[in-house]
Image 1 (cartoon, rainbow, N blue to C red):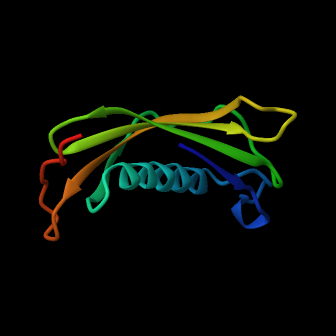
Image 2 (cartoon, rainbow, N blue to C red):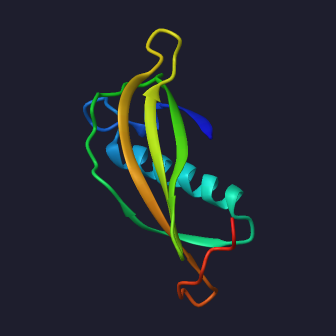
Image 3 (cartoon, rainbow, N blue to C red):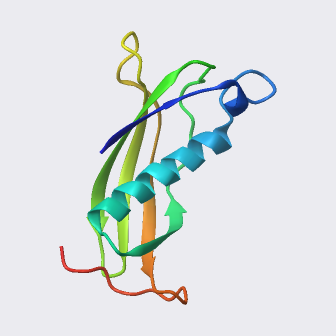
Length: 118
């Protein structure tokens, strides 16, 4: 799955660079969307992200490209790898950040329940 995001002034820290928390929020959101589209009618919560290391700085006006792909499905959990690139035509495939996001399926009371069959 592929998504894009435009970095706006409200996404910047006091030094004029993308605030890392915003990027992590988008990574989590886009991975959650991928899980929800793949497993309709399932409730997912984030249980973890692997290594968090920002490889490049990002300024206002940058278009970010998010590539999300499923890497693992267990009994109650599913994991997605998210790569974030500069998405403009000049710097296509310039890796900014990547991590794996793990979700667990839960019922209405927050208890783990099995994923449906693939």
